[in-house]
Image 1 (cartoon, rainbow, N blue to C red):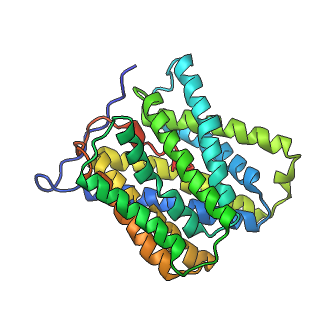
Image 2: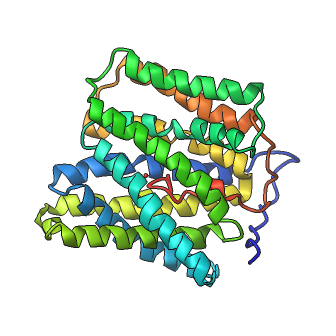
Image 3: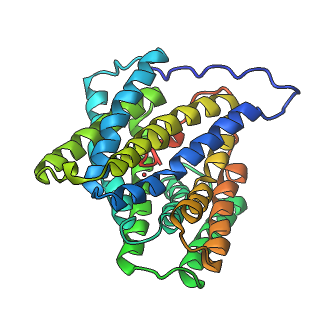
Length: 325
């Protein structure tokens, strides 16, 4: 099955000018994904556990993404072999990544968890180089160095009190997400990104609904605010975030979309400080800036820039929990 064509971008005001609407859509997506950790903290405070939060998130998000795919006239007929691979990618790969990240979130702040996760662009680049999918040049080395230095700064400079297990879970989430992306890049070839997102989230939904049943129904013991926060994760942090990312990427290309998405941890840190009262120490500020700078530099200078309106690349499909989390 050939990859579905991406709608051609609207004519820009001037030759070579950046589509501001497309960039704005990608920033809205980054803010949506950035809200996930904050909504997760609010859901925890209302009595939901990790399984309950993720079960509600995907129970709401999966039908929304299926509906969006149908409304956008994207074919969901991918053939049974591909469908099973995508459902497995969601039910196993995506589910494990989300479990690691949201368990880290029970022990460390929203901003710190997001910054640790955002080590993944550097890890994906390193993995792509190791697999022969990318070339190691000076810009790539600089991006990797900035990202690693940022993580060292976040963990080493004065700031919030660190929980060792929470940090380990956050780093494990970044490592697992790296593998998820590298494998997904292969499995998603030829599949429309919105259709793939619908299948992946459906697979994750099945996994977490099963886990919720096995947990003995404790999902039903939370406050209304907790259910509202988990629902917001599904609508704002998943369905809306994915839809705006794909719409924006069709207008600005994958490189600029990836750059805009790099501001996701900035939104998480800001929301964590404003909504949750998280501490904002020098480590989080200085290290966070380096992490974001590295994530921005990698797509900006580290590889061939993709033309606007060209076919979508699977590695930029946000099928995280993540696609981003």
